[in-house]
Image 1 (cartoon, one colour):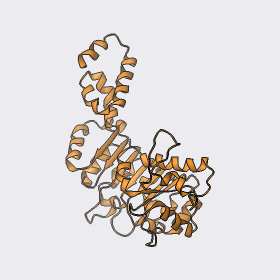
Image 2 (cartoon, rainbow, N blue to C red):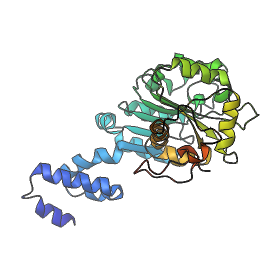
Image 3 (spheres, rainbow, N blue to C red):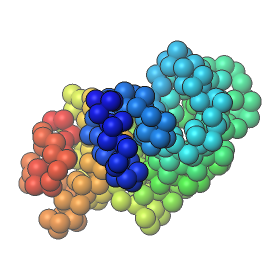
Image 4 (cartoon, one colour):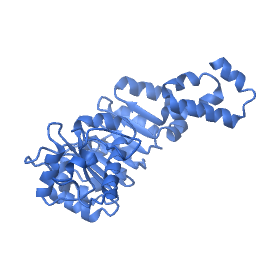
Length: 311
């Protein structure tokens, strides 16, 4: 195939050849490494696609990434747009990677500060301050050590519009960490407990819906063994009725977050479906069976079929 492409390149206009390779790379990303060896110009076209979404889940992958891009900071800054850093990556490795990838738009940060370093001594804090993220999925222990947690103090959050916090206690401690003061958010997501077990602190949601003027979606992640209907009924009992609350099954959380912002788009479609059907509140006992957040199929192509919550 390489020989054929090289022959074609002698008479194909550069723009057309570039579009052909970009289309081939988009249709079959796994073949991009093969295409890179065709010619230097092809490498220049396709390599940014290869690095646009980077998933690093262990120390060896972190070392490999750094060895590939440490001498190319300009390329790393302009090419890496989505980065997933998982718990097995060390804080020092994470700091070096973040310092390279200063053009990020979306970050999953699950590295936990397991030392007794003060917050200002955490190596992650420096490079995080310079990011201008719009989407963040974060374990709060990545940036805070100890009990003094106040989210509005995080410079990292100043441009964030989509925020997911992985810590299970956020649902009932949100007021104490200033979650309700992040009024620039358009999308918010966190995990909840079982109904009747401090599922969520209702006051934090009341504050959020009152002060977040740009808010589109609040995603609540339930445990797999609890039905969405049960969660919605509990929210009704607490007078929390808003069509922007969407309940998803936490069993699918990793699957959703490994791809690019997928659960955000699914939640947005659920809210849009409710608005199109003039549901000013979220599902009640009579309408819950038809709601997209409680059906069992996913259709990314059309709103005629509904996103899933895993029931």
